Amino acid sequence: MIMRRKLKLENKDIVFVSNALANGGAARVMCVLANEFNERGVKVGIAVFSQLEGEYSVSPSVAKEYGPQGSGFKAKIDRVVWLRDVVKRNPGAAIVAFEYFVNMQTILAGTGLPNRVVVSERNDPARVGNKFDWIRERLYRRADMLVCQTDEAAGYFSDKVKKCVILNPLKDDLPEPFTGVRRKAVVTFCRLEPQKNLSMLLRAFAKFYKSHPDYSLEIYGDGSERESLLSLAADLNIAACTSINPSRSDILEVVRDAAMFVLPSNYEGLSNSMLEAMAIGLPCICTDCPCGGARMVIEDGVNGYLVPVGDDKALLERMELADDCAAPLIRMEYVCKLRARLSSKDIANKWLKVIEE
Image (tube, rainbow, N blue to C red; front, side, top):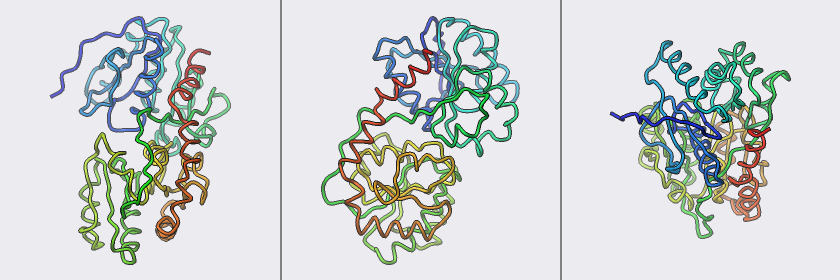
């Protein structure tokens, strides 16, 4: 059992609010920003709802305080009360929350207090949190700013919500792109959840493998679909050439020399896995899914491939193309442009501008 730390957040310049600091792209982006701000001398703290194993790394100078644990309605009320106390202890801080349910609780906790409140949607709002559209929209109107990852996500909310778009930052310690002969492997790394539609990848790979028997499929991640994916691989007769592995901290070093990266999601915000794969020079094939994250960075046929959601045939065709002519997709020009566009310093500058307005 994890012991919750007793540290109190006080007199910070920025207090981030997160459901957890593990198991997801939102937490990873928050930790990248917290570390970048901390390096600049900004006093940063993170208020965390749940303490989980495998938290992303933050500097020891970034203080963390964990709220009441548990689930259900009472736990939500307890968290709002606790979070209001955190905000009161940091009267000069900007409060920055990620993910719709954390955003709504944060806005309630900050009601009537002088702090600037910035909230951020980290997925497709039409698919995640849409059951609370009415109340979410009205609470977001009370926030000082809503930060979205894509234009499509921002467009989901009315003009009565103050909003802007900021893409995800890349980590500073990415490995260099691989320049040798690539091994015959199709790879992906993501949560093993229905949203990612990994069954589409298995079906397409089963057909691809018939004409490319020297290839393997490597999936890295944790989640509820592990057993069903293993079962599907067996049903498709590709179990011997398919591995489904736990997530790992050195994943980019492991996959950097693969032939291609595939992400067949039904919907996304802006996938960190996709961005990191592109930034280390992996040929990338992604679904052009709501809410437009992939098309924010991939120009189809130029620096990657886009395929329609759920279209196994189109995915197979793009895998064939990537095998035949991957070189144009991994030109260093594209890699360098992406790294510059999404550098943690530049993205942090955009966030600071929003936070300090």
